[in-house]
Image: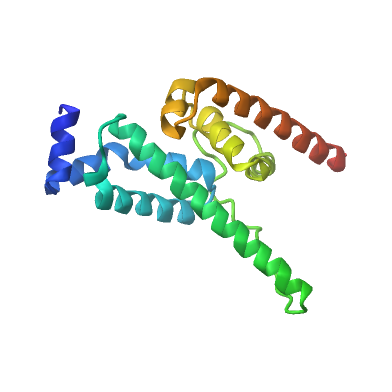
Length: 192
Protein backbone atom coordinates (compact mmCIF):
# COMPACT_ATOMS: atom_id res chain seq x y z
CA UNK A 1 0.00 0.00 0.00
CA UNK A 2 1.35 3.40 -0.98
CA UNK A 3 2.27 5.38 2.16
CA UNK A 4 0.31 8.57 1.39
CA UNK A 5 -2.88 6.60 0.69
CA UNK A 6 -2.35 4.68 3.91
CA UNK A 7 -1.85 7.93 5.87
CA UNK A 8 -5.00 9.39 4.29
CA UNK A 9 -6.96 6.29 5.37
CA UNK A 10 -5.58 6.68 8.91
CA UNK A 11 -6.54 10.36 8.98
CA UNK A 12 -10.02 9.44 7.72
CA UNK A 13 -10.32 7.06 10.70
CA UNK A 14 -10.77 3.92 8.61
CA UNK A 15 -10.75 0.83 10.83
CA UNK A 16 -8.75 -1.36 8.41
CA UNK A 17 -5.99 1.28 8.32
CA UNK A 18 -5.66 1.23 12.12
CA UNK A 19 -5.57 -2.57 12.11
CA UNK A 20 -2.84 -2.48 9.44
CA UNK A 21 -0.88 0.15 11.39
CA UNK A 22 -0.86 -2.05 14.48
CA UNK A 23 0.02 -5.07 12.41
CA UNK A 24 2.94 -3.24 10.76
CA UNK A 25 4.37 -1.52 13.83
CA UNK A 26 3.37 -3.47 16.95
CA UNK A 27 6.53 -5.60 17.15
CA UNK A 28 8.86 -2.73 16.19
CA UNK A 29 7.36 -0.37 18.76
CA UNK A 30 7.47 -3.03 21.49
CA UNK A 31 11.11 -3.89 20.63
CA UNK A 32 12.07 -0.22 20.96
CA UNK A 33 10.17 0.10 24.25
CA UNK A 34 11.85 -3.00 25.70
CA UNK A 35 15.22 -1.54 24.66
CA UNK A 36 14.64 1.50 26.83
CA UNK A 37 12.57 -0.09 29.59
CA UNK A 38 13.57 -3.75 30.02
CA UNK A 39 10.42 -4.75 31.89
CA UNK A 40 7.80 -6.54 29.80
CA UNK A 41 4.70 -5.09 31.49
CA UNK A 42 5.99 -1.51 31.44
CA UNK A 43 7.15 -1.86 27.82
CA UNK A 44 3.70 -3.17 26.83
CA UNK A 45 2.03 -0.23 28.61
CA UNK A 46 4.32 2.25 26.87
CA UNK A 47 3.71 0.59 23.48
CA UNK A 48 -0.02 0.92 24.09
CA UNK A 49 0.45 4.62 24.93
CA UNK A 50 2.39 5.03 21.69
CA UNK A 51 -0.51 3.72 19.59
CA UNK A 52 -3.02 5.84 21.50
CA UNK A 53 -0.83 8.87 20.77
CA UNK A 54 -0.49 7.90 17.09
CA UNK A 55 -4.28 7.45 16.77
CA UNK A 56 -4.99 10.73 18.57
CA UNK A 57 -2.46 12.81 16.65
CA UNK A 58 -2.33 11.26 13.16
CA UNK A 59 -4.16 14.34 11.85
CA UNK A 60 -1.11 16.42 12.95
CA UNK A 61 1.28 14.27 10.88
CA UNK A 62 2.57 16.61 8.16
CA UNK A 63 4.55 14.09 6.13
CA UNK A 64 7.91 15.84 6.63
CA UNK A 65 9.35 12.42 7.47
CA UNK A 66 8.32 8.84 6.86
CA UNK A 67 5.43 7.55 8.98
CA UNK A 68 7.78 5.00 10.59
CA UNK A 69 10.19 7.79 11.64
CA UNK A 70 7.34 9.75 13.19
CA UNK A 71 6.16 6.64 15.09
CA UNK A 72 9.73 5.96 16.34
CA UNK A 73 9.94 9.57 17.51
CA UNK A 74 6.72 9.14 19.51
CA UNK A 75 7.98 5.82 20.87
CA UNK A 76 11.32 7.17 22.07
CA UNK A 77 9.61 10.21 23.61
CA UNK A 78 7.14 7.98 25.49
CA UNK A 79 9.99 5.79 26.74
CA UNK A 80 12.04 8.76 27.93
CA UNK A 81 8.94 10.26 29.56
CA UNK A 82 8.39 6.98 31.44
CA UNK A 83 12.04 6.87 32.58
CA UNK A 84 11.86 10.49 33.77
CA UNK A 85 8.73 9.73 35.82
CA UNK A 86 10.35 6.60 37.28
CA UNK A 87 13.46 8.58 38.28
CA UNK A 88 11.26 11.23 39.91
CA UNK A 89 9.57 8.51 41.98
CA UNK A 90 12.99 7.21 43.05
CA UNK A 91 14.05 10.70 44.17
CA UNK A 92 10.76 11.05 46.08
CA UNK A 93 11.39 7.69 47.79
CA UNK A 94 14.91 8.82 48.72
CA UNK A 95 13.58 12.08 50.19
CA UNK A 96 10.98 10.14 52.16
CA UNK A 97 13.69 7.89 53.56
CA UNK A 98 15.60 11.00 54.68
CA UNK A 99 12.56 12.28 56.54
CA UNK A 100 12.07 9.00 58.38
CA UNK A 101 9.27 7.57 56.27
CA UNK A 102 11.48 4.72 55.17
CA UNK A 103 10.25 2.17 52.65
CA UNK A 104 12.01 -0.22 50.35
CA UNK A 105 11.76 -0.15 46.58
CA UNK A 106 12.19 -3.69 45.35
CA UNK A 107 14.08 -3.56 42.05
CA UNK A 108 15.07 -7.23 42.00
CA UNK A 109 12.44 -8.31 39.50
CA UNK A 110 12.26 -5.19 37.36
CA UNK A 111 14.38 -6.52 34.50
CA UNK A 112 12.01 -9.14 33.14
CA UNK A 113 13.16 -8.91 29.52
CA UNK A 114 16.88 -9.37 29.65
CA UNK A 115 16.99 -11.46 26.48
CA UNK A 116 16.07 -8.62 24.16
CA UNK A 117 16.58 -9.67 20.53
CA UNK A 118 19.02 -6.81 19.98
CA UNK A 119 21.32 -7.92 22.78
CA UNK A 120 22.98 -11.28 22.78
CA UNK A 121 24.61 -11.68 26.16
CA UNK A 122 25.22 -14.92 27.99
CA UNK A 123 24.23 -14.03 31.51
CA UNK A 124 21.26 -12.24 33.03
CA UNK A 125 23.46 -10.38 35.50
CA UNK A 126 25.63 -8.98 32.72
CA UNK A 127 22.52 -7.86 30.84
CA UNK A 128 21.04 -6.30 33.96
CA UNK A 129 24.30 -4.45 34.65
CA UNK A 130 24.44 -3.20 31.06
CA UNK A 131 20.84 -1.93 31.15
CA UNK A 132 21.49 -0.22 34.48
CA UNK A 133 24.61 1.43 33.06
CA UNK A 134 22.73 2.55 29.92
CA UNK A 135 19.98 4.04 32.08
CA UNK A 136 22.60 6.11 33.96
CA UNK A 137 23.65 7.86 30.75
CA UNK A 138 22.43 11.40 30.11
CA UNK A 139 19.13 11.29 28.22
CA UNK A 140 20.45 12.30 24.77
CA UNK A 141 23.31 9.77 24.98
CA UNK A 142 20.96 7.01 26.20
CA UNK A 143 18.56 7.70 23.34
CA UNK A 144 21.23 7.60 20.62
CA UNK A 145 23.06 4.61 22.11
CA UNK A 146 19.86 2.57 22.50
CA UNK A 147 18.64 3.31 18.99
CA UNK A 148 22.03 2.51 17.45
CA UNK A 149 23.39 -0.39 19.49
CA UNK A 150 20.23 -2.09 20.69
CA UNK A 151 17.65 -1.28 18.01
CA UNK A 152 20.28 -1.37 15.25
CA UNK A 153 19.26 1.95 13.66
CA UNK A 154 21.66 3.70 11.28
CA UNK A 155 22.99 7.19 11.99
CA UNK A 156 20.69 8.52 9.26
CA UNK A 157 17.62 6.87 10.85
CA UNK A 158 18.60 8.17 14.30
CA UNK A 159 19.10 11.63 12.83
CA UNK A 160 15.57 11.55 11.39
CA UNK A 161 14.03 10.19 14.63
CA UNK A 162 15.80 12.62 16.96
CA UNK A 163 15.95 15.55 14.53
CA UNK A 164 19.69 15.95 15.28
CA UNK A 165 22.55 16.16 12.79
CA UNK A 166 24.61 13.08 12.01
CA UNK A 167 27.72 14.73 13.51
CA UNK A 168 25.74 15.35 16.70
CA UNK A 169 24.67 11.67 16.71
CA UNK A 170 28.31 10.57 16.28
CA UNK A 171 29.41 12.83 19.13
CA UNK A 172 26.65 11.61 21.47
CA UNK A 173 27.44 8.00 20.62
CA UNK A 174 31.15 8.54 21.28
CA UNK A 175 30.43 10.13 24.69
CA UNK A 176 27.90 7.39 25.54
CA UNK A 177 30.50 4.69 24.81
CA UNK A 178 33.11 6.50 26.94
CA UNK A 179 30.65 6.92 29.82
CA UNK A 180 29.55 3.28 29.61
CA UNK A 181 33.17 2.16 29.51
CA UNK A 182 33.89 4.12 32.72
CA UNK A 183 30.72 2.94 34.39
CA UNK A 184 31.24 -0.73 33.52
CA UNK A 185 34.96 -0.56 34.37
CA UNK A 186 34.00 0.68 37.84
CA UNK A 187 31.42 -2.10 38.21
CA UNK A 188 33.84 -4.87 37.23
CA UNK A 189 36.58 -3.51 39.52
CA UNK A 190 34.11 -3.74 42.41
CA UNK A 191 33.14 -7.27 41.40
CA UNK A 192 36.71 -8.61 41.65
